[in-house]
Amino acid sequence: MKRRFSLTEGVSEKRLRRRTPVRLKQVRAVVAELSKRIGVELDFASAFLEKANFDNHDLLLVDRVPLAMQLENQSDEMGWYPTLRGVLAWQPGSGWAAVDHGAIPFLMNGADCMGAGIQIADPGVKEGDLICIRDESHGKPLAMGWALVSGEEMVAMSKGKAVKTIHWVGDDLWEVET
Image 1 (tube, rainbow, N blue to C red):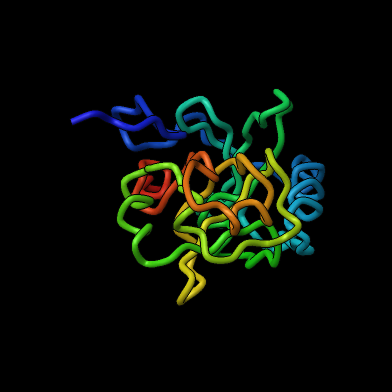
Image 2 (cartoon, helix red, strand yellow):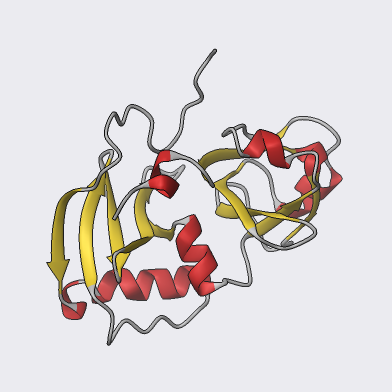
């Protein structure tokens, strides 16, 4: 059976490395970047914050839960993005695509999201954005990935890949023990 590439590929142990408690003032720039990116004002004043590393990706843990990750985007720029747990916690209103039930089993195995499975999408999504793929019926996040086309193009597609999946419910990052 052929393995799919994922954000966490090659990790033999499901554990965080170099876990370090940090103060809010040390991650203020990270919080500001995340707030701007997801369009939600984040308040970590009373939270226990940590930075950690998981498969060569820096993570921000809030109350021991990995809610944000640092990734290199399509333009080779590093930036902070929410993990699926971050999407669940913060409920951003933009940057999403919704798929029908037929696509869900494939996404749960780490497959890229095909345009035919996308029923609706945020029209503000641009090619190269990191987006959340969610269930059309319940709105629950299923996966995260890089948009290969705009939101409007995703909905119009009848074949081909629309999103390059990097993180999904059930992958190593989702299952990490904190």
